[in-house]
Image (cartoon, rainbow, N blue to C red; front, side):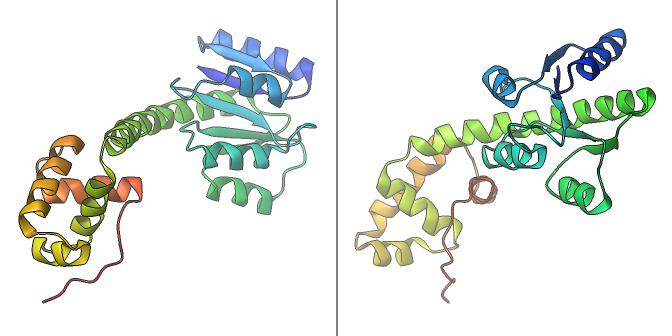
Length: 205
């Protein structure tokens, strides 16, 4: 899926014809609102986006999609881009930055590369969504125990921190491992890092 968003109808028609001729599935829009209403994060896709949109600047739309943890790679098109703008877009995760009038071959190559990137991001997005759903199943106490465990705290240290017995911590820890669907501490730490879960608690001797 290639989403195409530009406020110039003639350009949208021309690029749609070009991309469909290369057998891409294209959904074209001339307004940000229409795009946002149609966009589905579960699609493996990329977005060809004009920088200078009247409703919402393209870079601002990129920022908002990033805040929503969207896996959508963006190829920017601009008639007045400069180096600082392109650097900003690329640093923020853009797949490419092309100037108008865009070269057909360059656009097709950029779309193919962005769709490959989209497949990778989409797989990561789906995996993270699964981890978040599992995390939501933890009780508040299990969540506390998980935070301490991934910070490297021993069971007896966690028990002291939380004012409970070591046996209770062992039980909560087993529940965390089961609900999160991991088999080792290393896996739990990796997942916690992906989800931003953890405490800056220092290990004690």
